[in-house]
Amino acid sequence: MSQRAIGDHALLSDCRSAALVTSEGSVDWLCLPRFDSPAIFARLLDEDAGHWFIGPDCPAEVTRRYIGQTLVLETTFHTRSGTLILLDALALGKRERVHTLGASSPGLLLRQVTCVAGSVPVTMVYAPRPEFGLVQPLMQLVRGGLIARGGATVLTLSSPVELRVNGSTAAATFALRAGQSLGLALQAGWAWAQDPPCRSTRQVRRRIKDTIAGWRSWSRAHATYQGPWREQVQHSGRVLRAMTYAPTGAIVAAATTSLPETVGGERNWDYRFTWVRDASFTLQALSTAACEKEETAFFTFLARASATRLDRDADLQIMYGIGGERDLSERLLPHLTGWRGSAPVRVGNDAWRQYQLDVYGELLDAAYQTYCDIGPFDPLVRTMLATVAETAARRWREPDQSLWEVRSSSRHFTHSKLMCWVGLDRAIALAPLLGAEHRVADWSRTREEIRTAILKQAWNEQAGSFTQTFGGTDLDAALLMIPLVGFLSADDPRVRSTVHAVATQLTGARGLVHRYRTTDGLPGQEGTFLLCTFWLAHALALSGDDAAARRTFEIAASHANDVGLLAEEVDSATGEPLGNFPQALSHIGLINAAHAIGGIR
Image 1 (cartoon, rainbow, N blue to C red):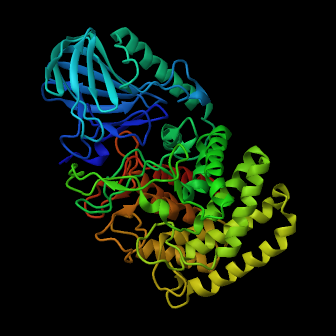
Image 2 (image 1 turned 180 degrees about the vertical axis):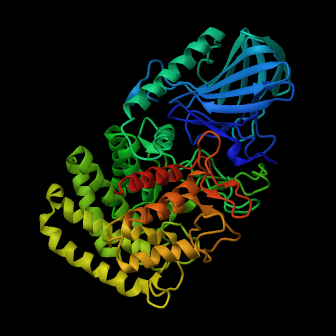
Image 3 (image 1 turned 45 degrees about the horizontal axis):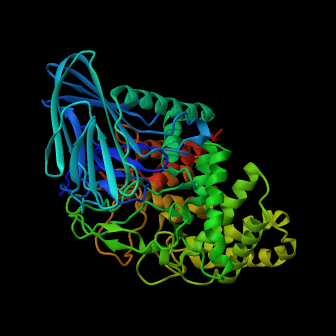
């Protein structure tokens, strides 16, 4: 089983797919040509599921960073005999700049190893295992490298050094002296198409330089944020861009599947999809750390994906594939042991079948934000949004499974009702643009009914807070949304009391916030959530408690790894990152909380 810490990995992206690289120089996760494609390397989930290692053949002290304003990874190995620098990148398309990043990414992993002092012995081990380790490909040495064939995939490894092949694994050992550099590359293609070509060291070097220039062009064009934690906000913006599937504008929730919420547990899900529930907070973050181009692309994707469901009077689906796919049926991969024995490993996510009321409000709030930033909608989107509002007005009284996707029975979750209120509130504001002025009176009455129901049925006088469900007693970090979406002012006594309750009752010893402490129909425990902690910082900022907001923000942000990446959760006992990695919502929470704290005067 894989034992390496989740936080030891660094992200590579070409804005279509992703790789994860360890501090040792091993690519332990690679999906091509899309984020949700079957993995070519999956040692992250099983020791025998494939990897590509390049590093010194001797003990070394390791430091690493992203080259300034990019997602090109630089790992430096300091050995007794010399110093080695390894550059890793997923190549962008040639001369792609600013908003064209990912338009023609070739599915090309670039690796350049350079000795900058002394001399260093180097080892390379290349063990591709397509389809999550099911395929052990046939290998054929060719001029300039090696071709591996198996299943639907053909892989071309470009290598200027002689390779030794043993079954489905290739290896090489070589020494580099100061000033010497080698470039290697891996490109995936289809078995029925022409084999990808081998590339020279010079070609690899040029593509890395071009990829650096591409990322820097995007970063320079999106350097407008001037608030606190500017570097972290800008880096989180790059991470969101890296997790965007360029052809559609969809943003994946995470780059991986089945990294668990607790070590050895069963809460292991595939996050390589896009959730509607993330829409409004994603757009807020994009407006701070990106720009209207990314906002437009993301909202357009959501609108198109959602429209056909509503045309057929079906429930609004809560999540979609990055190409707009609806059927995300879940299956198990029993041949994989899982990270630290955390099985089962899943591909697909059956949460797509769930009914969640909050998505109606999320979509309308996203529309409201999009209009404020970029202008009117086309006729089809106007019709679809009016239908979303009508559906929220008609169905808000129904129970659901909440934004947390509980797998127990449906209940009347306060957050779900809150988001229906948000949906109607935003629809009323948008009514002139939607051609729905005649619906405003009815929507206003229903909005007031929802408000009254929340204030009466979700407030628990004895607990001194709002509660997770109507008539309940349990807390939920999602209640922090009450001031964040404008339902009540942050200085309302009920809001202040609820924020205090979350801060004191849901916050663990490390200062991080749990989602809730109730049963949810799943076995096992989970860690504390970084997103919920950033929500708390955000709510504290809105209430004017600058010191507490900054303190809470710093605690959450301190759990980024050495290259600034955030996981979904943190183990309450050990402080170790848990869950799929990196997690878009954690970076979104960081951006939005920083912006809110920066707004305190």
